[in-house]
Length: 198
Image (cartoon, helix red, strand yellow):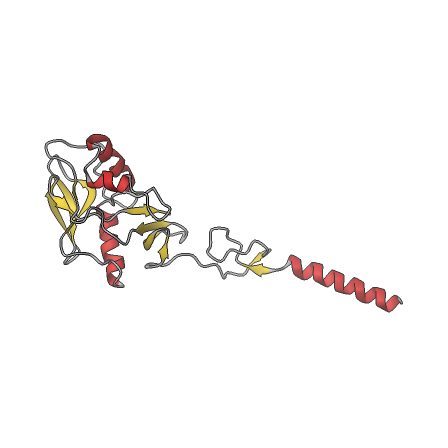
């Protein structure tokens, strides 16, 4: 009888000890997060370039590997939209770096309202997401470069508008045929690829 009790006690203690030590991914922002894991086993994985996620394709991932940028897999407005009209600088719409496209978009929408590339992105509500915006110069170049390398950009050969203003009359664009920077007038029609952050 004593042996039976000792066996039960041993099994109970072993179960408690091993359940407390369950290994797995303990980072809640990882794709394979295991809420029952007590100890991280370094198996966490996050996002990758070209992954279908969040309404489009991931084309940029920050250093944490937990956040980045997604491009829609379609163009807005067929042949595109104008950026705006020339003759005025838009305060705040001159950001060119990764992370500036959203604020650029907001500033353009405040200045021009409907009928622009920024407005088309800003008001887009598709695939369960309504936080799209017109990419900045570097965001647009990253989209072309990163998805282009793996054959997922599906860029046309023409000019793609960024949200980055150069001066009162011109903006930065990316030419789809060679994925190089170019400049065009604000009133020119450019292809529009909305992006969003995650």
